[in-house]
Amino acid sequence: MKPILLSAFIPALASAATSGQFTALTFNVAGLPEILQSNDVNGTKTENAQEIGTYFSEYGYDIIHLQEDFNYHAYIYETDDHAYRTATSGGAAIGSGLNTISNSDWIDFTRVKWNKCSDASGSDCLTPKGFTFMRWNPADGVFIDFYNVHADAGTEADDEAARNSNLQQVADYIDTWSTGNAVVVMGDTNSRYTRADDTGVRVFKSQNNLADPWVDLEKNGVYPTAGADALMCDNPSSVETCEIVDKILYRGSDIVTLGAESFAYVGDKFTNTNPDYLGDVLSDHDPILVNFTWSLSSSVRQSQFSGGPHGTWFSDLPSLPSSPVASVVTFRGAERLDSVAVKLADGTEFAHGGTGGSEVSLTLGPGEYWTKTELCTGQYDSHTRNFYIKATTSAGNTLEAGTATDSCTTFTADDGFAVVGFVGQTGDEIDQLALIYAAY
Ligand SMILES: *[C@@H]1O[C@H](CO)[C@@H](O)[C@H](O)[C@H]1NC(C)=O
Ligand SMILES: *[C@@H]1O[C@H](CO)[C@@H](O)[C@H](O)[C@H]1NC(C)=O
Image 1 (cartoon, rainbow, N blue to C red):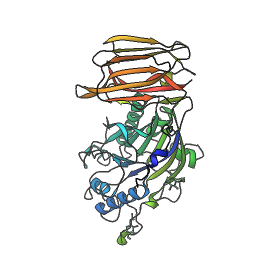
Image 2 (image 1 turned 45 degrees about the vertical axis):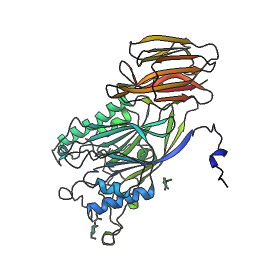
Image 3 (image 1 turned 135 degrees about the horizontal axis):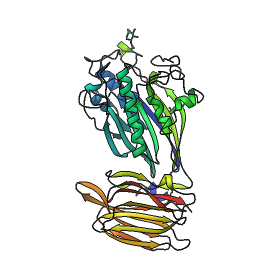
Image 4 (image 1 turned 60 degrees about the horizontal axis):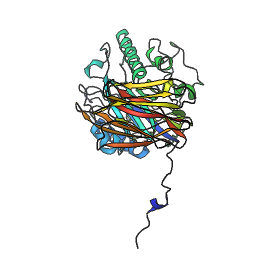
């Protein structure tokens, strides 16, 4: 007898998830070569790295940021079984030691080197440290920009200047590349709020409006005063009220609300199982675990992205009026897609891309909504761009521009939603594009 396929019983139009949760861990894994730095940890670094990877598999946290993942990287990946993992940028002196492992895929992964380093204490300039960036995609239409950071160490004046510059560099990058987006920064900032000269770590609150779950959940929402008595932690720490230099910071967006449900130092879940070092820590840093929830807005959503991460980031989200309705859609295209534009009923206009190609336009009738979009991509100058767009309205009217390829995706708005703007990356053409939908 033929087995009955379970999928036959799943409704064909099951709507995508509108809320969920994920666990986020940040862990400096002390992976500098043993001869340079023992990190005062017992056991061999090779075996400790294998143990760390085994724990990652066992706990299955949804996204993990690693710092100092240098010379024992292969041993962590040998025993870890996460489905999505960054390729190492190399051992000490070559790489940044930053890697991400995850249960969900991402787009636009980028490694950025610090503009400034200091050897005043330690050897921060020995290896090209910096930060990484990715748009993490845990569900359809859900993007969270994740930053993994390892800032300059030490407390000499030059170290402080380099570290504050590093963190300012990340804050400025967030302003440019994460406009309108949910953001999580997690990594080793080498900063404490209590250390008077560590002004840099506060920039994420003042400039980017990121919240700190440690402050909100463990310090009653009160940031420690600069220069106050240091709240030093044991490693592992059995309390959460003390402060370490590793941080997890976040904000939601108008599309995705993020909530930090819990904050914990979890070094006690990463101890040595080798009988010679039973119960000893595997790193000189205590990892942090934050359990997050996410939920999609009932008024604004977005599609997945089409195209490649070239050109400059833009988002219409911050400029969207309330209850937006599209009235005129305009495209330019020829061989490829040159520009996309939409005029809203209240007069707001969004236009992106260049002036090449020829212009086509569609005026929507009363009660007519742009609900379906086909986008096709191709290669130009070895970069992926959008070559074609076709908009279809609720009344069955269409508008197209550019040249279709054999690599196309159709994006359909959720029931009761329609396209009112865009988010993506452009130069004089449309490199990368996603649709912003609003409820009507
Ligand atoms: C290393 O082992 C020694 C001897 O057992 C112990 O006293 C010390 O606490 C251990 N260090 C760490 C960091 O676990
Ligand atoms: C956070 O999530 C992990 C993994 O699901 C779970 O084991 C842990 O109990 C959660 N922590 C809290 C405080 O809810």
